[in-house]
Length: 153
Image: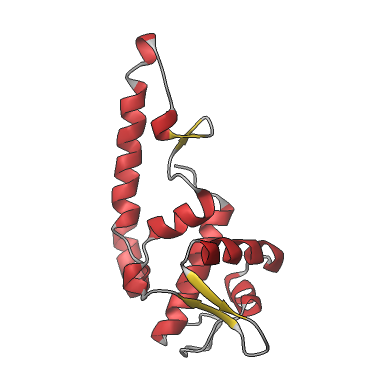
């Protein structure tokens, strides 16, 4: 699995919006239930605004974000952070979780001595899906720096 800048930025933006909904952290929304502005997200998360706007559009089209126009406008989650998974966000901005030569893992076809590779790529895809589909935005927001240190050792 390759995590693109687009996927990383999308997750960071969604976490910032989720943090604003929960009223915690520096999410660019001031820790309130107000809408989060794209400019604030870009600044706080250090994401180029023009790149972020395309990502936010994909997240809106995927049904993960609502957008409101105007001076008081901004972005909000369509569902509680507990109901949006990392997998939802990754699929919204990147399509398939696992690709082989640019194709979804299930479309990778082999013959002869390499025929078994299809099963390997599908198993890799399944393992990744298990992790990202069982991790919600709320799960990530509830982790502390000590949680992160213990998972990397």
